[in-house]
Amino acid sequence: MRSFNWYSVLIILLIFTSCRKSVPELKDIEVQSWMNDRNGCSGTRTATIDALKEQKRNFLGLSEMEIVQVFGKPDRNELYKRNQKFFYYYLQPAPECPTHTDNALRLAIRFNAVGLAKEISIE
Picture 1 (cartoon, one colour):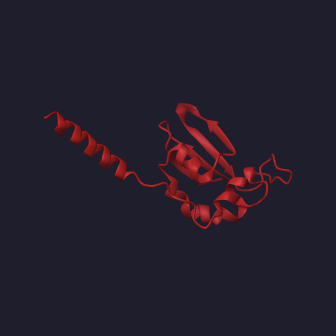
Picture 2 (tube, rainbow, N blue to C red):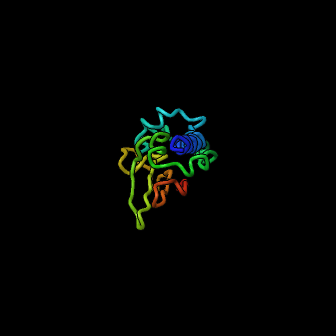
Picture 3 (tube, rainbow, N blue to C red):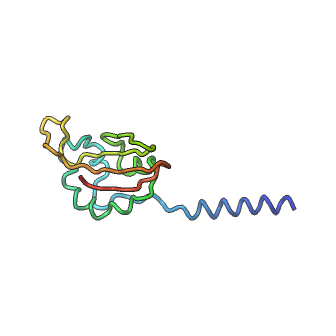
């Protein structure tokens, strides 16, 4: 009887791990160039705006670590009330850049209290 319980647990674990979807990749975007363009200072990210608009739904439900795996370390992050968190990636030169853009566009990712991407927008 004991072996039955262990087999049941093993089967359940296999089912849960096999059902987990893989982390999506950025399509039509040179990922290394994206990650190297911190704060959007070199202007590489500006060319990715249309591709991001088309793909942003693919990243909903990902964890913070999965988002970092896809987009790299955020340019800014913000802790909000009720344990919500925001990651920001500048798409145009940020105020820290020598050639900054006023009201620079940025990719904003809002995480819920359990750390999953709930909303992704370009603002």
